[in-house]
Image (cartoon, rainbow, N blue to C red; front, side, top):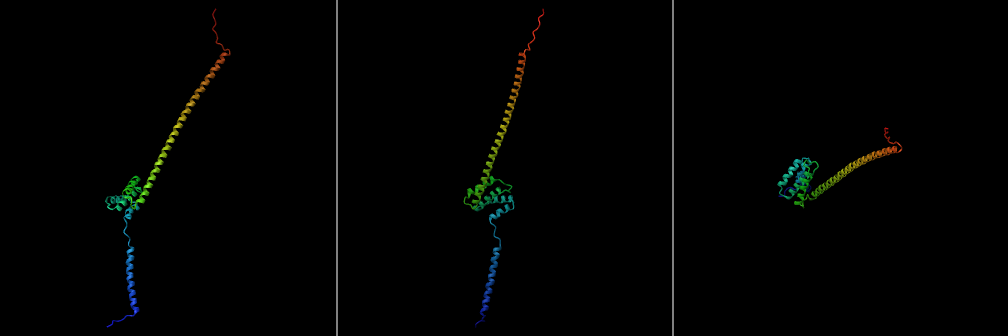
Amino acid sequence: MIGPRFPLNTVQVAIFLFCFFSLMGCSSSFLSLHRTSPAPSSQALSQGPMENSDFIRFRAENEERLQQCRQATECESALFHLGLAYISPESPYRDRYKALEYFNVLLGRYPRSSWTFQTRTWVALINEQVRLELNQRQLQAGLNKARADLHRAKTDLRTQENAVRGLKDQLDRSQEIDVEMERRERELLQGKEIPTPRENY
């Protein structure tokens, strides 16, 4: 017995509707899959507290990660972020030499790390800053020495000027004495003789 036949257009519509709803289900599940937020990476997790300026938590988390890390990537990340914790301008732990220590350990232990380029950049910046400050201190020391030498020279000059002034005063007084003596000598030579005592007869 042959079953009932559906018109061809009815079969086509049914197939179309089946495929349509199937595709709608797949697309909705696909969209829901992509709408879910991806799992945060270790980098995002480690930088989160620093973005909120919570450096106490940031340093503590990375110190713990460094002590417990088993894979190279975890150790590299912890070393790099500890360096950031000590180099960030807003960090209460700001210590560029401590940051340089962590960065150098990272470069020494993991020369092929994904953090190598950033770490080398930070090391270069820190070293340049140290060099500039050293030059500044040397220039300041030279300037202070020049000021001290100038002050000493001015003091010596004033001392010499006072000595010259004293000698000039002595010379002036000596000249006045010579003039007075010459005047008295002239008076004596002009006939002012010393009277002789009278004899008693």
